Length: 68
Image (tube, rainbow, N blue to C red; front, side):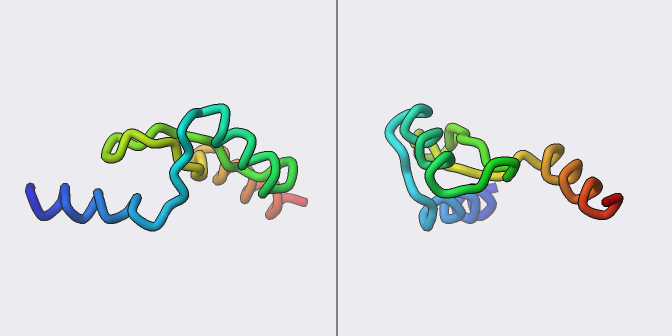
């Protein structure tokens, strides 16, 4: 279990850390095109806000691309 926790903590080491959800949301609007599936989320390991994909929405977007 300790190895798994250490591995998960390292996953957020390379991510940009935002102080608040609002700061992360601003970064989303500046960095990504409209319709991209990026959302801010609070990291359970470092407590900062990161930006990531919403898996359900990403799958939906991919299905739309296939059907178009």
